[in-house]
Image 1 (tube, rainbow, N blue to C red):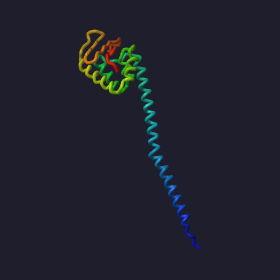
Image 2: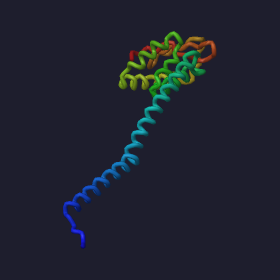
Image 3: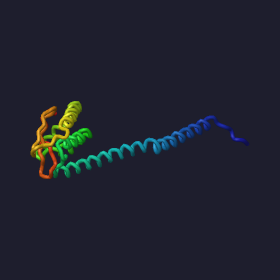
Image 4: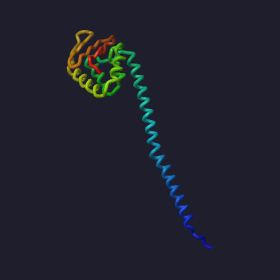
Length: 166
């Protein structure tokens, strides 16, 4: 005798089939689409944390010595490079040792608009200083920004002060 087809059993079978399809598709979607996104985000956070540690290490190493350029213009150029990369810790190390923490505080509290204007004036100052040869161990320049440099014991020029309110 033949089996009789029951509509209820067919619907249950179709429902189970759809459920299994959704379950398998969901698993595939999670493994191939969502999971890599989470791993990527976790990796990004890990890389950012490692980068921050590298920057802190560089700051500590650089703050123990005197860094600057062999001319006042080069020192300002390096300083601007650090400001543009938003690496304010390293930017502060181009100042004399006694002025670094105050400068770092000013830099980290400056608004983006103020920082942009500051960088523009620093670039103009670099252009104005050009290849001017300092005649002593102290060099000051007043236009467009008042800047005072000191030549330190290892022969590099460091910034003593920049008269600009951040």
